[in-house]
Amino acid sequence: MYFKNMKPKSKIGILGVGAIGTVISYELQKSDSHVLFYYNRTKKDCLKLISENSECEIPINIETSITGSPKLDWLIICLKEHQYSKAKYWFKKLISPKTQIAVIRNGINLKAPLLDFAAEKNILECMIDCPIQLQNEGSYKVIRKPILTVNKSPIANNFKLLFDAQSIEVNQTKDFKTANWRKLCESATLGAILCLSGETCWVFQDKKMRDLYRNIITEAVLVAQADGAKIESSFINEMLIKLMTYPDTKSSSMLIDRLNGNPIELGAKNGVISDLGKHYNVNTPMNDLIVSLLSKTNREDKA
Image (tube, rainbow, N blue to C red; front, side, top):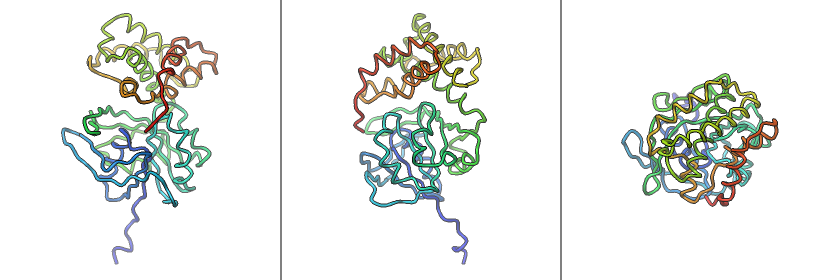
């Protein structure tokens, strides 16, 4: 008799099982309240994660194509910006009118590519702070507890309930645009310099490199402010102080992608700064140059 009153398990799809997708999957599988479905363009037999000095392998069944409609309660999209153009097949198959969607990636205006497939109220933009290192044999090492930042809303409340609050933070903010732009300004500046130099953060021992950082991030902040982000004048100096706390060996996702021969998230970072600079008549010569230089190194996504 008790079984009749049991709440049905949530059907959650994870689209994109790279570094972020692996971390999110690892956190979700801790709950018995979910049934997880994995979707990726390439096969994997298991998720490999090192967290808090403990290594685990979680067997999974990844679907690389879809024949029916899974009628998901949630779809969590962990794709990079340059992968979206080829993901429309997945969106059409996986999103129903009742599916709630969480988008976790770098960049701004994260809802835009999905508005043809879902109502805006069903889409949640997510910013993640989760340093991850790729280890041998395809395992990922999580450096510290993941933190997700989302816009305060009813769908954000629902999303937060999917996770164990002890192992992942989901913070709600009333000004997601500003929070997202702050991260973008920082990551685009750091990533571009490391990617172009081919070196880690030891390069910022040189004052000329710190001056370059200041010039690039200043452009980004001006564009962010023109777009409506409320970034204080003290932000740039705060980022320069933070920059000097990084270990010399700290890398960036842009540098790692370039060294591994993978596409760089150029459009989601310096590309969007350059494009919106033109839109708002804000001069961005440094970011324009970065886009010109790095666009020559980008290759078609093969993942």
